Length: 433
Image (cartoon, rainbow, N blue to C red; front, side):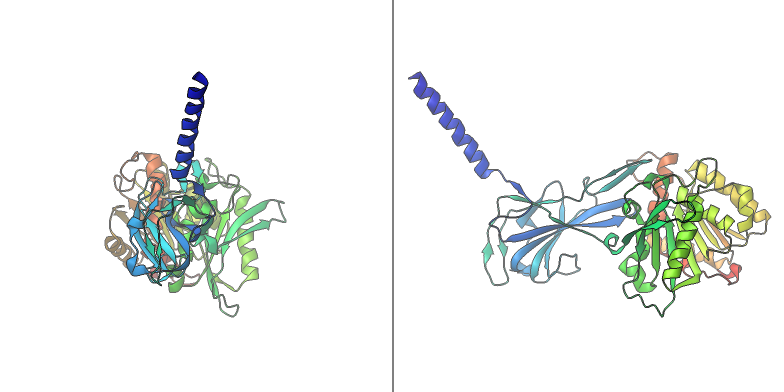
């Protein structure tokens, strides 16, 4: 009798386990026995870093866009903001019949970021999305695809804009050092046409051996290569990836100053680039290296856009006649006080400086108006300070570090600043721009 009860208990337990296995969704990368052929994670870079913003679910037949609802899907840990059909694994303004169901995801989701930076500590996550079809999906031919029980993980990734850069290496013949870099070449590059070049230099927080780290950290490197920017003005974009320190707290530049200039010269020799329209921009330590490069090679760049940086004030006097746009945060005491001293020194050397305090939370129209006003003053140096209390998002400490890091989230998103940079060219009257 005891043996019979024991056997019965074992059978019951086995039945429970089998039932659990039968009804609990499994995670799969490659669907088995499903109409779903693949799942693609789509990322995009924002001011605060790269985010996973959509999933593209590929089916074996065309899906009816008019009959698709967001309720037919769930995405683990994410909020679906929009669902539609497309004929490619890409976002669209309007849906149309095709084999791809596009699930747009909220940028505000806690799990949206794939690159997280806190001070000099960075965390990079592999873009992963888990999708489940929980309702009926209707094909263009009227066939009904019933819910699929398993959770499917993406087996493909599309990194918008980032994927358009080439990852390369420059071997410096003088020092023997290797400098990794990312290079964007205009899609319709014509060797008979001359192009401007923008070089973006990252801050210390993005220092890494992984070449595309600087691309996913924020907008500083990628914004110039976006389709909308390239439609306005085609340009090359160079984004070096430093694995070692480029400047130190004593305001001294390392060997990477000359290596970076040599890298730019190397690229100029390979492509038809306009030597009168070489631009440099950088944030924090990147802005500092940009200043140091301009001091050592004052006729190399047409103009810089400098964000959250400073340098030895007396050394900056040689830049007094240059066109520059400088942005710091009032709450970033180190950059704010350091650049104030630099501006004062350049003014004594003859610089004409337009100064303004901006609201970092202002809308596009207000910021555009501020840009136009400063340009209209006709002075060669534009010095913008973002007011304390308007830079750091809610939920973050409004301290020096918070202001330092968040200023570039704002600066590179201001279209007028990017437009201004491209109006600069060597040899023009510095007071007209």
